[in-house]
Image 1 (cartoon, rainbow, N blue to C red):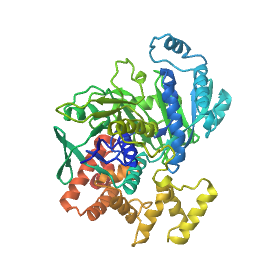
Image 2 (tube, helix red, strand yellow):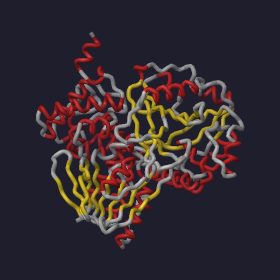
Image 3 (spheres, rainbow, N blue to C red):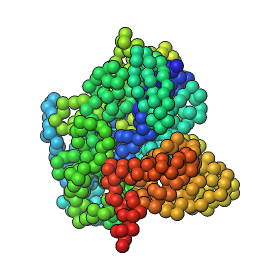
Image 4 (cartoon, rainbow, N blue to C red):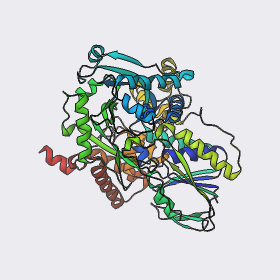
Length: 561
């Protein structure tokens, strides 16, 4: 028996799972794949207020997003950090006509944004956070000052504006840490990856473990559908047809180009394309992240960056940095996700609301439990959305809220040192207790925050050595991720437990070495390990654009010869 079953362990599902478990509710979270394994693993890595949402009049969403951004800077400082953001501006008054059209109820098409419109938006940004101003206020620079600071920018600009938002280094890990925190503190909760809804019969859900094949049944009082782009499919499987989702696809590139990396000046460049869409680029794990597209899609299954999307992103980049050329081999990694936006008749995808909403399908005689579908949402607002849906569930259960999460630290953000001196004292303490170099300790602290102490305890419990194919990871560090973080597959390891994939560090030799460690820790047979390794290569090739020579030792040797 479970009071609540949450289907979908993306960031929204994990958030509402945590909220309910902390109130003492018996709650089960399942996902047919890995935790944070679909769209929640493919964001732009921004934690932001949503400056662009002001254009569509979603001021309440911007207020909420800014408050949640500030909360994440406080609750997850190991992964969420301030990001100075600069907008190159090419017009003074562009966009004023479109703004007036919206004011009078007409919906204009895409348009450029001039300094006047951007200034108004940034003033509101600062105004909404005036009572908790933890990041610097915005400022404008003249054309000459902008080009002096960023000489590679298109010199046709008229000025620039700089404001602050935030970025997240390991969103997949932050989501996982919320699961681990909850399981450690709340014995009434259970979270399972690779467990799917097999069928619904009356008041009973049948779940199947996709790895072992084992089945179990539950009789929930409430079901939360947090399956993102699959919400309508999941509702249909529970005999509750819906048409809630009209998703769009966003694709990104990871580029290794030293000139482009230097040209950012450690800022995010937030720029318009000639057709009025917004793109971003910023330094990420020694590379540069560039994106994104916004295309309507019919199917949520296995999104990937198409050649046309890649061309669009690179052409847009060439507009803002016209003298920097990106060679094909400098694109190390591609990733795409489906935004689970509400179904809309908007002619332009950018006009579809980015707000979140809970759609309730009432209980019926044939299905005696209500379904609450979590439609929309974004990474920045996951906590608020989870709280709002949890409160709806608590009403159904006649259960009082006893805990709030707005100031609850997450994972390695707990007891996080608030300044450089405290940080150094912590590292000095670790230096005395563990046989690791200062550089290694700093590296682990950056990866795991204060959770690095648990990793260090595990490293110290046995002999260890660096991986042959990637010496900034060690065998026991990988072993910790497998043993204690619900790692089931090689893709879990390279895409979600670590930044190896998105950091552009996958090599044929590394995949073979990591698979051997998985075989050992999960007691896989040689045939099972080989099948997993081949599946991983296929997925990295199809969904992330890796070339054969990046995946297969034989291909790499042939290329070298």
